[in-house]
Length: 169
Image (tube, rainbow, N blue to C red; front, side, top):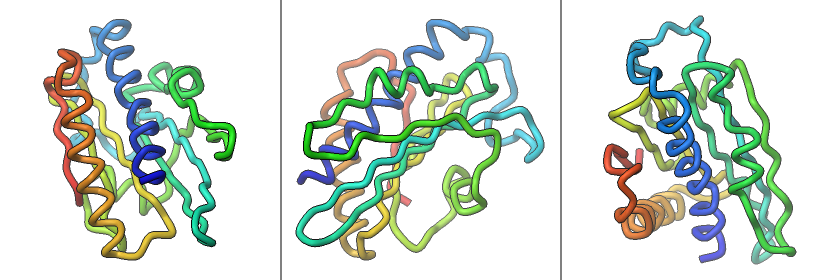
């Protein structure tokens, strides 16, 4: 359960980013869809990572958000929205111009060795991925399903999220 709570906290990053994008970058809706952006486009990425030690195991939670430009990178927003308890390591958050190929594939909804949580917004070019390294395949499917249910339950009331599509890949 601790992993789900931490993963949901990472998803709050997407919630904050989504609201910020809609409020400060209304023009982003006029840009080409994220899925059609060429590999050498000016896309920028926010990466948030946190390590959790639990039951003698170590887990690395990774959340990635793709934005249409470096100006859309949510580093400051991530620091504002990512709040964890005293016992957990603090998340590291950074803006990136490039992604590792495995993360780019995840943003494109390609299968990976683990099941991961994918979010996209149909109203602006924004996509996000949350994956927990250190889980086995069955655990990742279970946790992702819980994340999807919790996300739907927790954020369904918010009008900023009505265009969000979540899935487990």
